[in-house]
Length: 195
Image: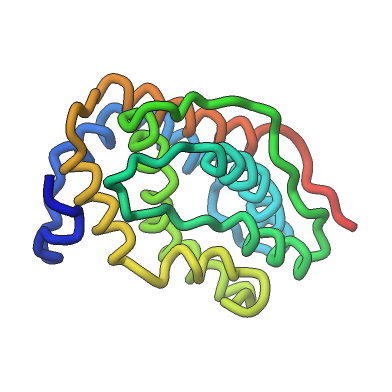
């Protein structure tokens, strides 16, 4: 199989992406509603705190993954940037939840990564909302800056998704829905703690 970066960069259509989008629509819409439109520093702080818990949990899950040897691509890890943003806002740094998501096969891993890397697209909109509250790539919105700076990262992920052999769409969609459910649980789980 050819390395994932040999496909032309202008390739934007991904059948697997759109099928995953269709199969995860409900979870995605519920998560978007839970995040809401932050319109104050307080509501933005809530978002940073809960997203910090989710991304710390997922970054921990990904740290234990045995990456397929042919995959040169790696996801954008943002929990460290979220920890700095939490500190800027006077929040306790989020802790990872004790959950286990089975990422032991490439299809499941791609399903989880679809959710995580797909959030980079929404980060562009959220970055502007955060900027309206005075948050920048150097204060309070480092994670949004990191997530939205490189659209090539998302395009490279789509190439990897489309080129993956022995891909099981049912397994990928089930894992993607599990990750959306975890994110929703983080956003609905409680309160953000200030230092």
